[in-house]
Length: 122
Image (cartoon, rainbow, N blue to C red; front, side, top):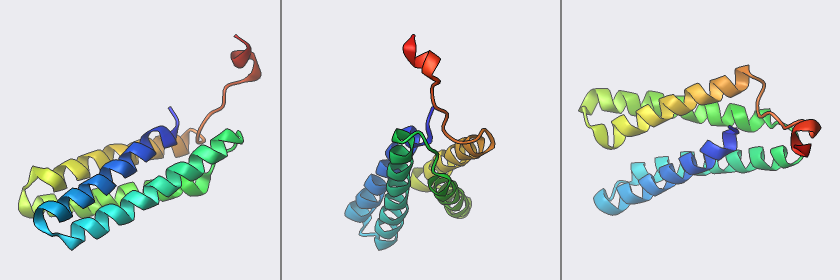
């Protein structure tokens, strides 16, 4: 599986969560955090997708995705520990931890892999 296949939906979920947090509670922190990290992830996913279309890897995008996921895991994990609220802090921390693990796996295995010419012919 390619990183952009998960990064773009992950970014959209964060953007939507920020907007919902602002709409329900008037939380500008939710809006800024959700839009900020969500758009960073959407940009990284788009850059990775465009690189993949050229049969290349964008390590810049992969590092940016990894950093965002680790930061969200840390920040939202701290918030969960302080408040014990599953929604949104616990959920975002858990999803971000899974995504950070996925991104680390992608880094260790060399990024996105491309099908060989023989595999395409089948």
